[in-house]
Image (cartoon, rainbow, N blue to C red; front, side, top):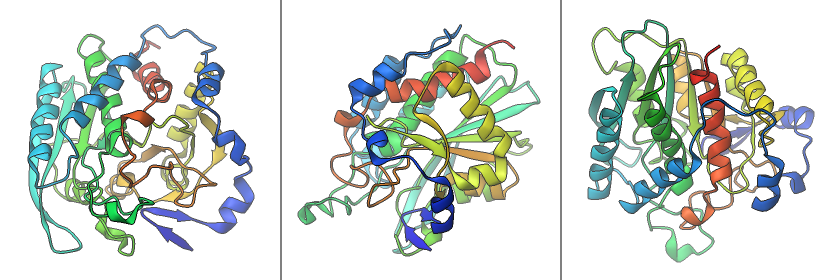
Amino acid sequence: MLIRKYLYIMATLLASTMSCSGSANKASSEQTAASESTTVTPGIKFNADSAYAFVQRQCDFGPRVPNTQAHRDCALYLESELRRNGADVTVQKASLKAFDGTMLQSFNIIGEFYPEKKERVLLLAHWDTRPWADRDEDESKHKEPVMGANDGGSGVGVLLEMARLLRTNEPNVGIDILFLDSEDWGSYSVDDSWALGAQYWANNPHREGYVKPRYGILLDMVGDIDAVFSKEYFSSRYAGGIVDKVWATAQHLGYSRFVNREGGAITDDHLQINQMGIPCIDIIDMRENSSTGFFPMWHTTGDTMERIDRTSLEAVGQTLTTLFLEKK
């Protein structure tokens, strides 16, 4: 078993299920955008420009590394955006011990939309960024923080735009949006050193009487220019029906970034959610021909807005919008 930062690629699984060539993953942004003209016109449009602006706004604070001013300022911004759009908001504060002994002042931020609805779905993403660009080709930059436009910022940007849509479009189910903290301060050699905010939330409900949602959908690294979303192994294992529903919706809309193949097995925030009894899937950009398993700028100083593509954000955001806001 090959272990990387929260990526376990099972050789037998890959041999039997991963058949796409590298060239398919490396299409230019122009080719990708051209191939993703939707086959169905959605009734409620997800605004990719708005989602892009939400990613930019996070990056304007700088790297959102725990225990920094940028981190604290961004936490206040995320809380205010959820409140502005009508959510009942709880900020779960915790001091979490990292693998290196650092105590991380952490903020899980939860917005409950239409709280009167008993049937609920959880949408989540981590919002913190990695303190070290330790995958950068330039070793002199290994101690610099990562901006995290894609790894952190993109999933949050999509969900902030979802929150804006939820203000004026009532879904059939209640929606909880959860921004998880302290995901990315981990060691490649210590499996449980990642997803500290998710670990804490799974063991400590953010409020008394919180009713578990029916299922959850995690967004992680969904904004890269060449993003490709295959079906993550643990997602299929714990919540295969939800995976099929999401991928079918994306393909119905014509989004070729969602590919109908099994991907690797990833230890991400969704595992903690699954283990607490909420079936949860992970929409995440995986690269079978990458040396890390992820997009080229992962955990480098190059994870900046220059790599963020509106068509990637739209593919994920419109899929969720169609799932939850289109009247059936």
